[in-house]
Length: 277
Ligand code: UDP
Ligand code: MN
Image 1 (cartoon, rainbow, N blue to C red):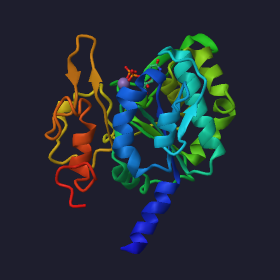
Image 2: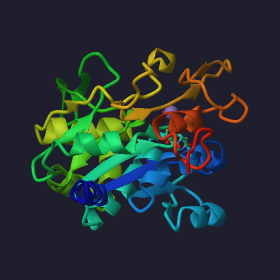
Image 3: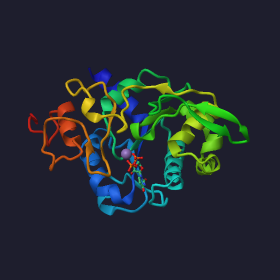
């Protein structure tokens, strides 16, 4: 049992988890994250945002990184943050880079189960596309030609092995990622797919257990949520919600459903009603 535990701890320590956020979501989105799954990977998870937040920085033991990127939803700002995430991973000694949005719940043990099946010394791009076919864009150097590739939706989370990230780094590190986003005019997650799939010829490996809010959350099988790796939620412009349908805390207490989900997965967690601790 102890050997098993040591192995899991070692694997967890080899992962760099990053969360993309922005100032105006610190309260509404980061609070539910920091109160729940973040606690299962406190030393391995870093939050990339665009402002200082001493209170949050204290709560996360100094894991808030102010990228000084613009706080907008435009491509440049999002690519700037992804660029910072990638560079920070490259500077670390970690074997895996896993990116998430701040509206993701990450089932940490399920993520470990996944990564234990892959070798970080090989090229791996793990994630889930939201499109039904590869994206087609004009060839950046020859507009009469078309190229196509799959990309993992950033809002479902994705992981890159150290080996692949190292191969990507000549075009992606030291701020070059942002330049590339600009030159091909694609969002950050699409640019990742462009580099891995098109430039390096390493296709996305589809992981069905990653879930963004492009999927209907109430269709998720909550009797058996354990193998699922990520979850999400969204409130649409008309105020309708796409959230997990799950018993637990009230909607007022837990609008994202993350606390209820956390208690379903880890019933002994301190704030859970059935906690035996
Ligand atoms: N985000 C950001 N700056 C913004 C808006 C959003 O960094 O001005 C981040 C946000 O924190 C999240 C991701 O970008 O991690 C996706 O944002 P959101 O969920 O609002 O939009 P989506 O792309 O999922 O529709
Ligand atoms: Mn989102």
